[in-house]
Length: 386
Image: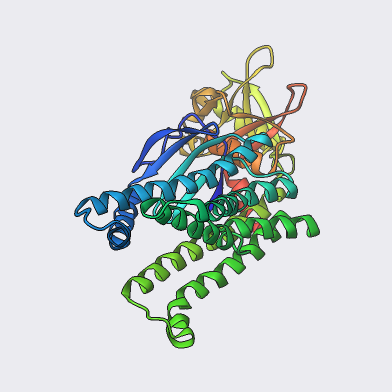
């Protein structure tokens, strides 16, 4: 299984690579990572292929397992080409690609950011299956001229595996590439990217149920022999599809609420006071002005802090005349002053990068517009879901 995975833009605190992975190189501008689960599947392939190796080249002994392992590496080399095509197209459209990871069920390409247009989503997604079909076609064309033995076996395996991967990845359900193709089509028709994700996610859930029932269909309808391994593989694939589809649906529903988050609309009216003004007087002036927040400023009117509501409440009233307002204000460090027109996903990313209870909202000319509280953003988000 393969899919390009869109991720938030990188930040300074993001780890260089996920835990449990080993970097083996760079391709198409991205780090190539191998997960620990890959070694398990490579060993399984080596064991499963060994009897076939013994048939085509008898007398290898234990070396047949080495040949099976080499076949696994060659097979995953074609998976790497599949993922590299996703990465190349994404980079063509200007999206950074941080890594390509080979894992138990295939591969994943980590693309930083979401596609901005349906056509970009389509070509990034479809590039992988087309590459697999092309590799399978080339291997099929080489079949008649390949020498007997291990070479012919490898060519047959590459042809069959890549044609199968190419076709299966075009199944129109998330998290498969075909799901992103379906998403791009619905997005293009309805101009609603979230609707495209939800529809493709539900199709992915149906595909998951189909994968789970496939061994029974093989046995009861087709009359093919089915063993324990078939049921285990079907279960693993079904769980992969179901979890990926469910995550896509949940993410789309959450993202559909984000456009309703507009900082200007959520801003609290604020009162600017000198940072050395007694806290009691600052509170009195704010109540008189019906302001929902207080900003401390220097003598020349430059904002330097935002009063923290929790710190204010925690200060006893009998102490407020004797402490400066600055003692309960958070200094305006980087990330605490936001443009008043920020909204949607950009707003969520900004407050996620710099967690705080309050943020100062400023106009394009630097003047103070108001204060945005994290609790108001959270309340607006929850209200958008009802």
